[in-house]
Image (cartoon, rainbow, N blue to C red):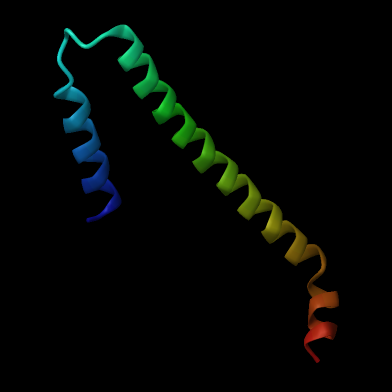
Length: 66
């Protein structure tokens, strides 16, 4: 399944939550989705840091590889 398809399935699942669902359950679901979003942002930030470090230390890595 593609990312777009997965997101669509998630949206469908959220729309199926009954209006009568307890607020505590909805709050828990929202917290879970927010946690996922934060983790994705953190991973992207770490990947950017790694790219930065590699770019800054490219010469050192090149020498180590020899």
